[in-house]
Amino acid sequence: MQLIDGKATANKIKEELKKEVAAIIDSEERAPHLVAVLVGNDPASDTYVSSKEKNAKKLGFTSSVYRLESDTSEEELLKTVDFLNKDPEVDGFIVQLPLPEHIDSDKVIQSVDPKKDVDGFHPVNLGRMMTGLPAYLPATPNGIMELLKRYEIETEGKHCVVLGRSNIVGTPMNILMSRKTNPGNATVTMCHSRTKNLEEHIKSADIIIAAMGKKEFVTADMVKEGAVVIDVGIHREKSDKTKSGYKLKGDVAFDEVSKKASFMTPVPGGVGPMTIVSLLMNTLKAYKKEIYPE
Image 1 (cartoon, rainbow, N blue to C red):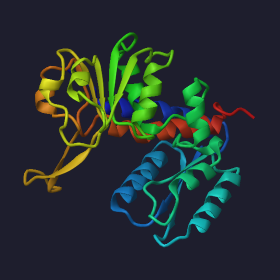
Image 2: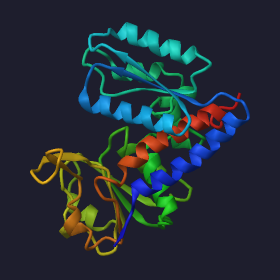
Image 3: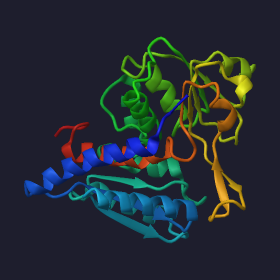
Image 4: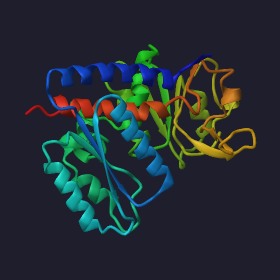
C-alpha cells in the first residue's frame, strides 16, 4: 500500500504558490488578498480560520479576518458581505460555516459575489463546475482531485463510490470524478444513508471516497483488494497516549483497510492539509482573474 501523503503534497504546492506570489510582489504589484469572516466563537471554526490566516501570510498573501459576535444579526452579516464584494482590494473571501442558527446560511452564501467565492459554494460556481466551465472548486474536493493527479492514480473507466452527498464534499466529488477530465472519466455511484445494499456497492469500488461522517464505518471486509481509498472523515477520540488527550480517526478503519488498499490517505495528514492549500489556490486564481476575466 502506498500512503497518499497530503501533508507533503500540500507543502509542495505551498512552495509553488509562495514563488508565484513572491514574483507578483517583486513586480511591485499588491499581494493577493484573502479575507475570512467568522461569526461567533466556535472553537473548531476559530482554529480553522486562524490556520488559514497563518498559512496565507507565510506564503506572502495578505490575509484578514473579520470577527463578528455570535449575536450579530443576519442583516449586519449581509452588510459585511456586501462591503467585501465591493472592496477592490479583496480578491476572495469566505464566510466560515457553520453560522449561528438565527442566520440563513444559504442566503449568506448566495449573497457572496461568485467572482470572490473562493470557497466554491455559490450556486453559480457549482453550476459552472457541473457544466465543465472554469469555476472555483470547493476546497476539499479540489484537494482530493489534486492528490489523485499528483499521485498519478488512474481514474478513467474506474468505478468510484462516493459515500456521502453533502454540497461541500459528496455531490461535488460525484460531478468531478465523472467529468471528461484527468482525473475524472470514472463511473460514479453516490451512496448515502438511504442507500440499499450499501456494502455491496462499496465492495465493487475501484476508488472509495468516504465522506459519511461515521467513525471507521468502512472496514476491510467492505473493500476489495487493490482499491484506492480516500478518507475525508475526521473524528476526535479520547486517548491517554497523546499530549492533546485525543487522537483523530477517519471514516475508514485505517489499520485493517490499509492492508488491502493500493493507495490510501491517512487521518490526519491526508485530505485535511489540502483543504487550506486549495483555498489559497482559488484566491490566487481570483487575483489573476483566471475564472472570471474582466
